[in-house]
Image (cartoon, rainbow, N blue to C red; front, side, top):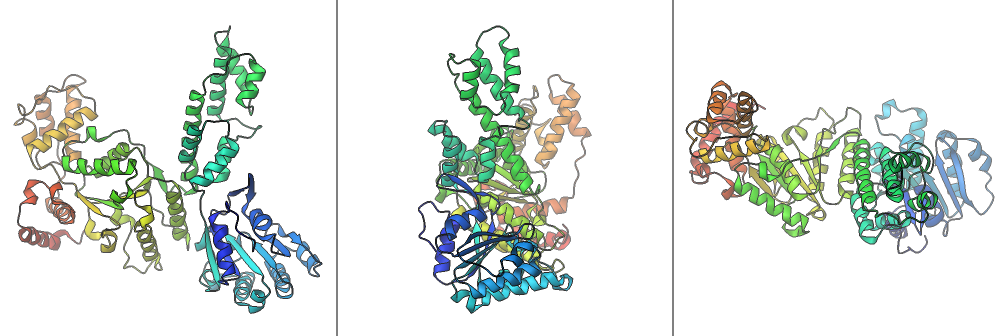
Length: 608
């Protein structure tokens, strides 16, 4: 292997280190394998980077193989008797025996095996074809072959998802696995410097931040659009504005700009300026930068959601804590966390938060407000389970790799008890256990502190695995309870009036008896429903106490009192800080609470 270059990607450095230590002669590269590798001002496919940069100085023969195009020799310093067999065939049953002869009879040979999962699939061996079985056995034998190892030969298997590759290969102790990550900030900075050097340093750094989570090939496509073909409407609008500014107050400037924008597709601003108005002063590019950032944000969301098969959803929060009524201590706690994350005080940031309490207490609403307060990217995890063997684990790995690459991000998991399922069941072949185990591993990785914050929400924390709730994963447990006093109800009513932009004559404590006293015991969601009904009765005029009286009289809240009380008591016991509890629970005897909780558990604890 050659000496490591200063700007080699991390996976290439690890490949060199592990090979020189004699750890293995067969390696599996997985993860971001279909991206471009940026090295010394040039973009390479992964196979070409490995062949031309990593392996060429030390190998005598370098082959690339996939089942579509067959074998290609990137380097060949002497004659090969099996050459004709290799060139004319594509089937692994014919190709692999010929390659094995080369690996056994020649020295310093490297094989790059692309799309390895197509030849070495995961699944029940009883349903494999003879070709599948032969290929799996061949690759397993190669990894254990002392002859291949002594000949200084190596085999590199390339697959996107490790879980799609046959476990006979992956679990083999003589086959090492290497993860190819998404581009880090340093790599993105080099790529942006290459393809967007015209921008000032501050804007280039902004581009580095907003492209977190994207591949090099995607960044290149966004910042270096193709000169021909369909044009993006946002890019055409940017050109139109640029041309309008160049034309200034000339006759029919807007009409001319529209036409010119259509015929200058693919041209740079400098080329457009030389064509349209060579003597004009170049307009400020601030507006164009804004359009570019909006385009990147939009495309980034589309790309990531598509690549994760719609298993994640970006959170667009339109409200902050100003429309969250009551829960002052909880808001103070969350604002402190938001400040620490924004200012990079990672050691003061929790690894995760558990929002727990009965339904309708505003857990999701507060989580979205918290996202707005932090100003960070936030995503919601959807169900990533699949009926296909290995697909659930592959889905999860793809999601986690994207999350890790996105920089600072908040991950919201609603109905966490349902999302993680029941580990005790073996009906899914152990998938639940493996999935939850991988999530636990990721959540407790201290490298993510201050970068990835999990918010898990549930009204049944007793259904969650105990280990996932421990400190180091969900450090803070925040209880959300129904308003306990008239003052708390009034705070929620005021917030809902503000949120829905109603005009109201209701004044507290003057109207306390007519309004807030009657709403004690209602959930936040039910209070919002009453406010909306009062607004409906007001018919777009000012809401009065009478409107509220009528709305409270007519509204029928759903009630499962025992279950709601049980959920509330569980939330109280889960709370990690006594000051976040209302006075009703902060001072009551713990043994008395425990006794009541046990009674309710016997009555409703078995229910979902």
